[in-house]
Length: 242
Ligand code: NAP
Image 1 (cartoon, helix red, strand yellow):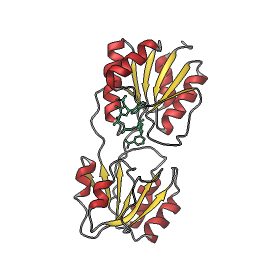
Image 2: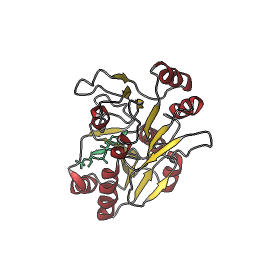
Image 3: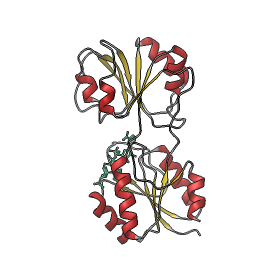
């Protein structure tokens, strides 16, 4: 049934696709952003920006906004908002639907070093490794603090501090081509790539390039989230709402 008010927890390209699909199906959509990126790519429909103030704040927002469902399309590593979402929707008596891309899995030609957390990733590099860091800004400090490491750190927006001179900063937004990723790995003499297991096609080129160059990949596993009805594509989620 169309014309429902849906709150989308956003901050990903998948959330923007979902907002578009929900609007196309005749729903009213409000997409919520945490407010951590200065210039986010905004989806169609209504937008709100900033934290809710924890689970209670999200519960209040759902009730006063008269929403019919909560669609969580946040990043697979955004575990706190997922917990808040599951609990707040249950308390409000609303369906919680999660949109999440499947995780990447290694091919026989891959050399993955799998680690459970970002903190664990910092410890696995051999001395003086040349690292391509693609984990964003938030958890980067521990890598930069290891004085024997250097390489390239890629993120969307500048760091609020100057990185050590051993590191080159690349400010860029996905998607990237396999050829450009290969060139970056070669040019900076990268020995290890580190990434969160985000899944999806948007940032997979770096894995393909690393595979071709036989560069080991330090793969950070997804954090646990409370179980929920999960959809691999926006149309599947929209169909379930009907
Ligand atoms: P998180 O640890 O799960 O959440 C931290 C807090 O940020 C939440 O408690 C909530 O604040 C607020 N928040 C998160 N997502 C929100 C949303 N869509 N709308 C309103 N408030 C939100 O999340 P995170 O890992 O810091 O990620 C923050 C945002 O960046 C998410 O929207 C996520 O989709 C996006 N993102 C994250 C990653 C990543 O690697 N973690 C990568 C790409 C994009 P209150 O408690 O005050 O409500």
